[in-house]
Length: 358
Image (tube, rainbow, N blue to C red; front, side, top):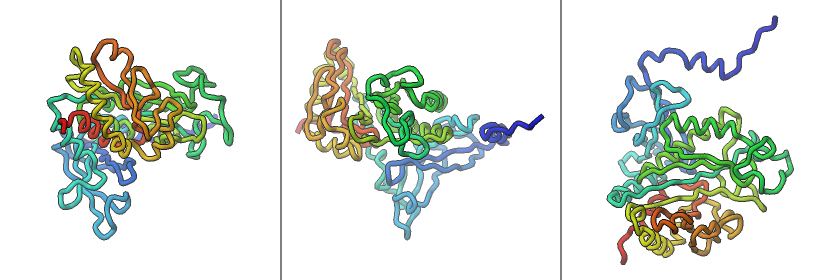
């Protein structure tokens, strides 16, 4: 009889099952200077009831493009807690804002401003739902999942919401991520395979105010951690493959209390009018390399032009057909790229749509 070699997962599980003796592992998560996620772990003596119960921490900002080497300490201020689906038990994920030693928000901390905006317009109850598109790559980081090495798959068409081994690639990662989000307490509302093979989408929301950015960032952390376990690389680049392939966006659905009431279509149209006047301000925070995606093709409006229409996926902003029919609901801003900072996007949407007339 030959011995069975245990899998890495089984070996790790043996240790994760050990008693933690009442201690809690808290994974402190933050956004770095490249709009990417970082994290490290702190041991706590007891489980906190809120983020305000958690201690501040710090990190070397010179290694994350957030501080110079001669003055590298950046502070971590906990702002939200989620359950940890990897360590499970009472262990937690801790989303943090970054601050300089003098107490000012770090230059990469866009949440601080977004929180002020959301507090200012809290009585309008801004709701969001963001459609996060992304692409799964093989471990080389160059070949999309399901694509032949050095070649191309069949043309787009059968992959969107597809079923079958010749149409869908990476469902194991997607299912694991979905369940991890539910366990963590992320408001994930659905998933689907996208138009390009190896590309997927999940939706986070509806969330009110600052919660939208918090939940989307944690969902991205979970996606990267899950994909890490599968040896898969996640890309949020808005045009991961040049040519006649769909790009990846972060369509942002938005409504206020006035838009959701009877006759709310008037408030929707007024918001769109105000947003149109700041089109290039929006584009400036709607993602790096978004010009490669917003070409006017592949279900996008051109980056230089603002447009809107009912059920028009080639417009900058779409009013869904059922919203126009019911006369109330929400709008869909189709301009944001897949690599946005959701704090910047939700803040400017609220600011430009709700600011008083000059």
